[in-house]
Image (cartoon, rainbow, N blue to C red; front, side, top):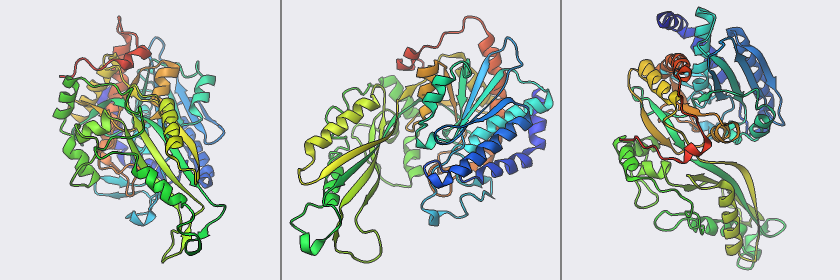
Length: 477
């Protein structure tokens, strides 16, 4: 059977790439309202494609923002159910001048397909769609029951996913959820992610006079909101790279020496610097670059607004300024608690000469995967057969909001099985997807569905519980 599936994929390689290009051409930037119609068009395209490959009950479900696409195949009685998640929305493309080819005109150069969303997450999501197609077009059936859930708001924090889950618990019942929206170590170094940091996205605004003022007439008498904002930002870290918000580290869970030793053997520290394009690292003392992005929390300044931005000088004191801040949090940090701590900190340090407001854009809790669930064994087997190498286990610094929702709201175990490379430039200009990984990913997904059917059908399967995510992996050696 596997030979037949491999032959089908091999004979359709060119078509698969062209279809992926079609999906990438939709400028599905969820953060920009002007692309709302593009997201709806892409959702309809995905729904039609799922119908064409043989899925049933396919729907495009409206939300208060961007649609959710659902489909299923439920003709494997007695077999487990696998829920496949992906997102079709993408990050903004700025700065557009840094792209070597238009971001929504997918272009193949060498073994890489360039375009916004090529790896995050349209290409990785498409590996699973093509695996389903291979099964249904060759044998007419799948080894497991399957449900698909593709959303258009992941890049803005998935605000409509929680209410959708609450309304559709029965519809989303599954034995395991699998998603591919992360990177592996290299083309021949697959990896299973077992922990991800949580996130808190805030916007801090400082305002002063009712309108911009002439800096010659008022400079020295009026406190500039932009100056205040810069002073606040400059004080958010100490000389050791630690966040200065009081009590920020109080709930940070320590990581056992054995796990830190395993992380060191993965050899990722140099890769972090290489992929970032820097020669010297920065951050909290006492931790390596990999540890800083994986087991330690962080605060990053994503952008500053305020004052004159054009060419040449302009003598002005701006009426307002703002900064976009991104917290990445680790177990057991609660984003809501960190939000409160930050707001209290700002109230304490804000001078009386200006006013401030803080807007919360999104929150997501950190997650840790139970490595002893049988589907993790299925993923190990699938990677070995799909890539020809055993996977390593990684902690990741990024955040995928849906992972926590699967665990905490639906009680579904999650397999995080990525296919992107560290240099695929997710969120950056010239994003790409390594095409050999695309096809190895399809093979891995095919094998995962087959082995998940076997593993989840075995007796004495350990029951997954939300509390399991609090346990550190005991078998990292």
